[in-house]
Length: 152
Image (cartoon, rainbow, N blue to C red):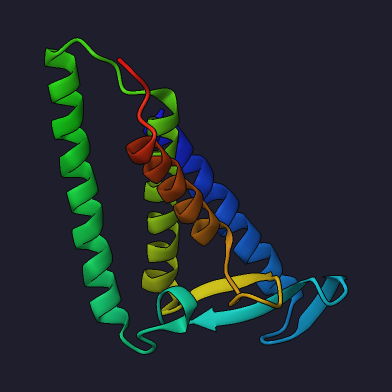
């Protein structure tokens, strides 16, 4: 399930970036809902909110280490749950798939282009993309599960 979600995130993210990069020019903003939601093509060499701009090698290193830690944790978690004969909740698998897919999709941009393509512009928040959204939603799901665990 995790791999399926991650692959779907990568496909949707990369396809949306490809289409919008083709139809929008850099920094051009197209209003979808005037003063609320625009499509604005931005090339982000930093991380969230444009922090660490120009540090692509460092960001790639941190991303790779983070992905390795996620995979290591998943292997450990699944092994522990199998020995305890407990399953991993579907929403947790989806959350991890969202985070993994989002991180890989942005890493593909960094490796291929040297920057991440962002285009979702709500005017009150820095411009972001589908991968960023998936990482955020996945993290929020996991945080919710930590603070409100279901009884087993």
